Length: 253
Image (cartoon, rainbow, N blue to C red; front, side, top):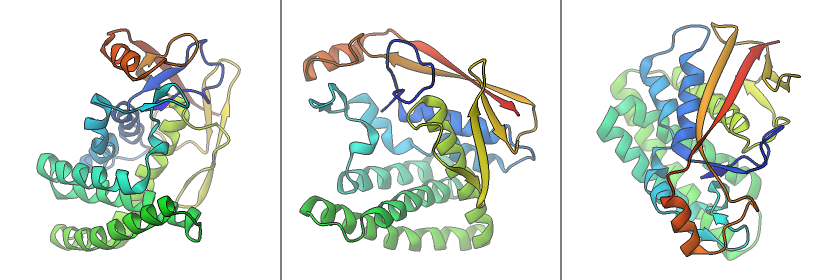
């Protein structure tokens, strides 16, 4: 689960957005790309957070924030087995190319984690580093096998993975889970993102086929105080059918 704390000009209520809903926006971003992409690449973008399905149904409570635990608070030692199950689900449901890209997105996440924490101290971080290294080693072998079986070149897979990483970051910004100032790039080419006077998001250079894109993101409003009192109250909140729609527009600058 992620939260709209960084959304510019957000409503009074903080919104909770599921990881699969955010991933759906990632898929919509690539579906609108300036040239046609393989449909399984678009599908992988839209399903890259399949690992979070069980978690979204039964999240644990963070007493410090008064919210369900946010996705970035989950350590790699806990996260990696979830992601592994997500790759297996992708393989069973959609086949090797989607599973390859979901697996590859996990590798991107864990390489970034290791880059940030490689020499950090603390038993928790050590366990997380070991889990990241284990995932990277085992999934490199799986990815190599799938690429060979599918006849895909490493450069092609790297390009597809970069597109998914771009769509993932842009979607997180649109959902308000990351600030607008987070760097964006495609294949190391910087992309400038700005908030326009009407609240839309301007993008330059523009990589899409249409001049404007609109996204409707289903979200759960948190209580007015932005906090939930305890785990029992969180379960009542999860059972509440109340939803709202967060609309986001991307425009050519």
